[in-house]
Image (cartoon, rainbow, N blue to C red; front, side):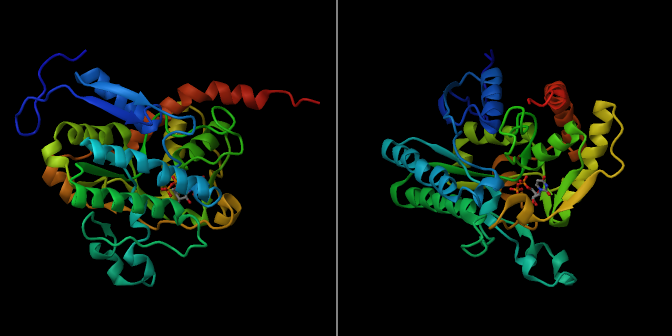
Length: 345
Ligand code: UDP
């Protein structure tokens, strides 16, 4: 238990708080709970639901758009209302998907402007939110998240709600999502870290959707949680702000991620990698009708640097090494057992 007095970024003593955490059993919530309980005197009121706090896996956005919109918008409404009406501070978890596509994605592939950050850098108070057409149901999530952000912002402007909005940029690490057929449905499609982990655990090639050209920046969950702690303990600096939380230095294409994960997994499992480690698959085959993709996501870090002095520390290689060590230790045996079971006649 932490007993030493904690001070905020301005040197003031932080008084113990009671934090109501919705989704405390999920990926982000469990890491946040762990840190708050180990390092602070704060009390956590942990709340969770069977379907977690909200749907946040792209495979669901186009196949379960109603559940996606209800869980991310409608179900969040009473929480926002409660905070506004009772003078409670709200830290709301949104997503980098609210930015949608970059302006640069509309330029010709060989345009020199693509190198200009003005065409791709995602900035909280300046970048537009660019989504595809309604029939591309992939954007149901981004749109629901954007509307709840706008509602929270309006509650702040009209009713004085104290809020902070967090936009996670591909936070990854242990306990993210599930391994299909082991601790989740065998036909389920988690996000890319768990999809690729599953392929590696089963000795199958990693599937590259539409060539694996999309780019992502990945940040280690433990780095990101430090940013959230700063928000919790520095309300004067965090209130009224939207923060990108990501690692602009960890950018790769999905294809590069597949190559790196293959190398790292071979190292941590001490197993040789496949001769053909990846295969191509179309998005329609993999996700079904209505899928679309974000092309590139680099967070502008100016606001979070200025307000909270936060910077991520962990390189992509290092975060993959600790995460895949966890995946191997947690799942390798279970996968081996599941795949060696005789087929029931
Ligand atoms: N992807 C892939 N193979 C997989 C899973 C995902 O190529 O087995 C791609 C997906 O099409 C997207 C990227 O990886 O371009 C990241 O997908 P993820 O589901 O992690 O979420 P997103 O970053 O799109 O929210």
